[in-house]
Length: 186
Image 1 (cartoon, rainbow, N blue to C red):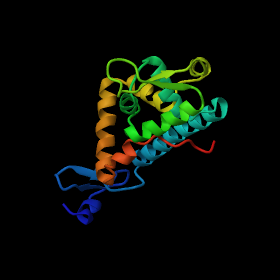
Image 2: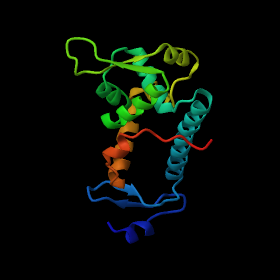
Image 3: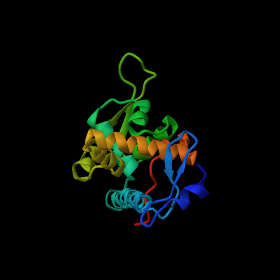
């Protein structure tokens, strides 16, 4: 069915639909209230994460990503750099750079303990533990925490919908998926 014929069948109050390549109907009206609502909700979610990140940095002197890494290190002393990278969903090289900054602030120490001296283990310092006692959850951790409190059906729908959106955008970029959200200007 072509778009022209389909839109002629639309009556007042209906959203124009068109058929995708796989036989599914897709919304073809960018002003569809659902689409507008999705865009607005994305903006709200991203801005909330950015505002929280900026506030954390102003209040505690560390970025939200640094706070999250420190929080994970304190929660599981002795983690490796690759394990921090996995938990934060970032590349190991990004994790290493992030940890360098935390270590430079005296909040983290690296140690080679145990039988395999090649493995670097991470530990929060006393100053790092003190910071964590007053700091909030990091924004990305806060976002993940919110997702873990969703009903399973909602989480599945959100996951499928976001995957479909990313596929349509052709934005399957590991760099984007594995990079922390930058702090906002709030």
